[in-house]
Length: 306
Image 1 (cartoon, rainbow, N blue to C red):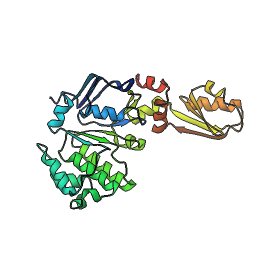
Image 2 (cartoon, rainbow, N blue to C red):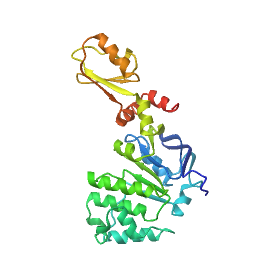
Image 3 (cartoon, rainbow, N blue to C red):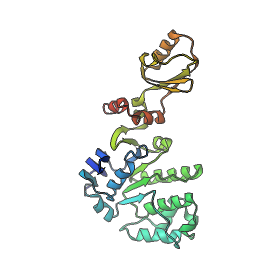
Image 4 (cartoon, rainbow, N blue to C red):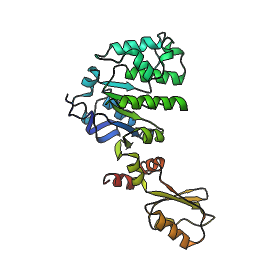
C-alpha cells in the first residue's frame, strides 16, 4: 500500500445476481482526503457498491482496491471504518463498553472519549445500547465507525432516524473529521446533504456511474433553468420544440420546461400567447438527480464531457 495509490479504486467492477447486474462495469477513483457522496434510487446499486468496497462481496469481474490493495487487507489493517444501515444493537452492553471494545481491535485507535464526543454521545457512555432511541443508536454506530481512527470512513445513510438538530451536529462532526485528512464516502437520500457536505457527488443508476462531479456541475448537466407556467387548458405538443428546451414535464395544469436558454424559451412562449404564473428558477440538485436517473441519457452524456 502506498500513499500515492487512490484511497478507493474500482476498475470495471461487476457484481451480478443471475441476470441482474447490480454493479455493471463501475470505474471510479477517490483520492486521499476527498469527501464523496454516493446517490442513487433504491435498487440502483449503492449498497452492492459499498459491499464490494468493504470486501463484504467479491466482484465477479474487474478489480476493487483500497489504498492499492484488496479491500480485505485494508480492513484487517484497521484503515477502514464503516457505519452500515443493517447493524443491530448489541444487548446488555453500554455505549462506552461497545466503543472501547471496537477501539481495542485497531492498531492506533481514537481515544474512546474523543470518539464519543465526535459522535455527540459522551453523555450516553453508561447507557445500554439496546435501550437507546433510533437516533441515539445511529450516533453510536457513528462512534463505532470512528473508533479505530480510520483513514477511510464509509457511511451508509448516516443521518437516517436523526432529527434536524442531530443531523446538523452529525455533519459538523463529520466535516471536522474529514478536515484532518481522512477520506469519507457516504450514501444518502437527502440530496441537500450531498450538495452541502460533499466535495464530489457520484450518481449511480442501474449499476453504473452516470454522473461524477460537484453539485453545480450536475445542475448544469441537467439543464440550466426550469421554466414553469400554467397551461390554462392549452396543449403541450409544441413545447418540446421551443428554443432551449431539453425536456417537458406536466404536473396537473402546470408545465415545467428544463431549458438551456431560459431567456429564449420565455420569449418564444410569449410569442405563443399570454403566459400565466410564469416562473424561472435555477435547476436544483433534485432536478439534476431526476434527469440523470429518469432513463434519459442526455444529462449523463453531457456529464461525460464536462
